[in-house]
Length: 232
Ligand SMILES: O=c1ccn([C@@H]2O[C@H](COP(=O)(O)O)[C@@H](O)[C@H]2O)c(=O)[nH]1
Image (cartoon, rainbow, N blue to C red; front, side):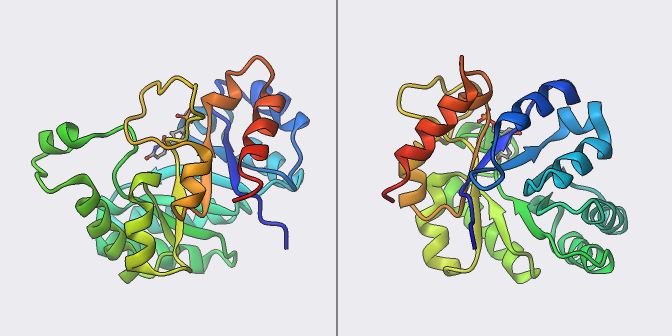
């Protein structure tokens, strides 16, 4: 089965912008991510439209709340027919187990993953939260907790992917944002890798937003990135 590795982050302010890009893209070549900005502006209807157009949709709402609330949010999100959804691993084991149960109740079977440490954060940002362990160790700790709670994978940076792959096995899904082609601006990302480095490091899926959506020609940017990972 075709399993596109690139997830394009549709970080747009409204449905029109997102649909205009989706119109140019092929569901066989990429999946799409709907995050907090677009979902808040355009709602579940936009997600359903993208699903109807046969795109695999990653609903990136990063739920983080008490277990009952997260379970119900995950149940509702799963009913939209998305391919993947997520919670924050820092919500803890009970919250993640509840999320798993919420997905099961939906009658759908999207991948359920958990965010470890945001790719915008560095060691200083983590220390400001009172976490003085090295970033990679903290990511690994949260990823182990995620696996033990029965989730399918994590969001991490590609820099941690080799350690996670070794510790957690080949079936555990590693979804990596913070992807930047060699000449691209880092924007607010800290823990970054090129598309080729990310795949070679063991990433399952690459989340790519601004290097595509803010390119002069987003389709050409996506095609160039796809070509750069063909041989890996
Ligand atoms: O740790 C995380 C978790 C989620 N994201 C999301 O991925 C995209 C990245 O967009 P770029 O424009 O390629 O930086 C964005 O939607 C984030 O919300 C992340 O970057 N890091």
